[in-house]
Length: 83
Image: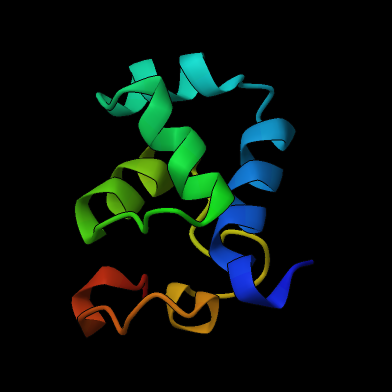
């Protein structure tokens, strides 16, 4: 996993595990396909709302075994994390 783009790598991995292509994920997330591509390449970083939608869509609370803070994104409010 690329340490400089840990978030993008994990997003790509989760997308593939869930068997979405970028266009399908983008449609489910209400973003442009180019946005997903930029997130995965590390050109842009997703905001909290995207991550919340991703969690709801995939049913994955920990996304690759870690919480979002270890992705190098930001610290989310405590109410975001389950139990």
